[in-house]
Structures are given as C-alpha cells and as structure tokens.
Image (cartoon, rainbow, N blue to C red):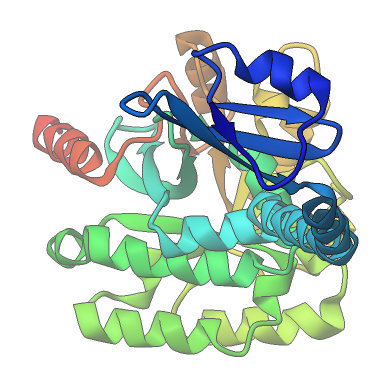
Amino acid sequence: MVISSQPLPAKVWQRIKDPHVDMLTLDNTVYRIQRIPELGSGIVTWSSTLPLQQRIRQQLFFWLPAGIFTSLLATWLLLRLLRHLRSPRNSMLDALNSEAIQVHYQPIISLQDGKIAGAEALARWQQPDGTFLSPDIFIPLAEQTGLITQLTEDIVRKIFTDLGPWLRQRPEVHISINLSVDDLRSPTLPTLLHDQLQHWGIAAEQIILEITERGFVDPETTMPVIAHYRQAGHRISIDDFGTGYSSLSYLQKLDVDTLKIDKSFVDTLEYRPLTPHIIEMAKALNLATVAEGVETESQRDWLRQHGVQYAQGWLYSKALPKEQFILWAEHNLHAH
C-alpha cells in the first residue's frame, strides 16, 4: 500500500513498485519513497525542481560576471608579479640584497721577478644552480638599469671586508677596482672609498681605479673627478687601452698612471703591429703597463722583452674567491 496526497503518474507507479527504488526524478519533479515494511506500506513525497532551477539561474546570472571579473583580476595580478620577478632590474636588486654577487680576485704579477703586485677585483653573480653569470652580461645590465653605481659601491664594501686586514699587513699589494662612466658622476663613491680606507687603515695608493677609455670621452665632467681621486692618493689606470682612440696625443691628455693592454692585443702579439706601438706610447709618457689575458709562456716572454711591467691571466691564476686568493698570494710572496 502506498500513501500519497495526490494521484501519482502511471510512470511513477511503475517505478516505485521496485522495492530497491527510494528516490527518482521525473518531469522536473523529485519523488522520495519512505517504505514501512512492518505495515506493508510506504509514503511518497515529492517536490518540483523548477523553483530550484530558477534560483540557480538567478545565482548564476549574478555570480558568473563576478567570478569572471575576479578571475581576470587574479590573472592580471599574477602576470604583474611574474613580470616583477623576471624584471632585469629587480633580478639585479635581488642579487645585491641577497649577497648573490661576490668578488673574486685575479692576481697581477710583476714580469721582472714573478712576484704578485696586486689583483683586479672582478664581480661574480652566482646563480641558484651554483654557476656564475658572466660579467659581460650583468655589468651592461647594471648600466642599462641604472644600478651600476649601487653595484660598484657594493663591490667596494665587499673588497674591504674581504681583504681589509690583509691589505693593511701587505702595503706593497694593491687592488684594482673598475669604475664605469656613471661611477665617475657619483657623489657618494669618493666618500665611501675615503671612509673605508680610514676604517681599515689602508693607504689610498693600494686602491687603483680602472677606467675605460669611454670614461674619458667627456673630459669636462670626468677629469675633475679623476683629479680628485689622484689628489686623494689613488692611482688611475686606463683599462682596455687600444680598443678606442689609441693615439699619443689622446693619451697625453689623460691624467693616468697605468695603461692596461687589452686581451685582444695579447692574443695576437705576433700579428698586430699596434701592440708594440701602444707599449712605446706608454714608455714615452712614463706610464706603467699591464697586459691582460696572458695565457702562455711565449706571451709572457714577448711582453717582458718589450718592456711591459705587469701581467695577469690564466698563465698565473684565474680570478679566485677571497680565501683562495689570500692563500695563493701568500704562497707567491713567500716563494719570492
């Protein structure tokens, strides 16, 4: 026996006769059967799904645009975050703030006696996988993003932290620091150098400032700054000489102490007549000369025979982290 408040459609009657059917949906109506085995009867209740469908449609019309807007906003914010993370400038800032940029030191050797005279400080940007990004990539990046002076000042601080006590004990050794054109316009860099020298008790002549030929293109701006550094006791080196103007008249105008011969000239000593010419110009102006990228004994011998005083390159050592550099330098000094 089935109890129902209203007649049930024939299709429903046929379905609910099945003792295993407790609920069914038919023609937008949900039927639920509550069976009472003890009485041999059952109760059928039902309700229409149309109001629920209408409510769902109403909710959909309201929430769907809101959901689409929220999704678009979240996507936009995510893209902005990814752009921020991948921005070259932000990558450089993150590297500076996380100490990912380190300083390595490549020895500079006297060609007369093989004794270390100093080292060039070279920045190294360590990547998450432990490899190092080439300075040929990230130095131009720092210049393009306006962070080169911040990078240089960070390197200066690291140099003194790394080698301050050792340099104080080794006054005969110098460290060369590369300066960009923008660094020459910095009002804070001279003060930073002065303060670090005073703090660590190091002579200014132990810090040589290397400037490329491009740094002398605007003499009205750069020459007073260079004069200030020289008056403070720093020696000035013109880096990569020969890749720019390379004339005696031009060189005479530069207030420098040392001329560095670019590696491209060292690689082709026997085939480029300009290299002896550069060496003779330096001699005529009483400038010291440093050959970069020396890799073979024949290059070393040729440079020494032609009067070049100093050399650096893989023939002697690659650029080393501070601990390895100090060990290398001490071994070299004790050997001579």
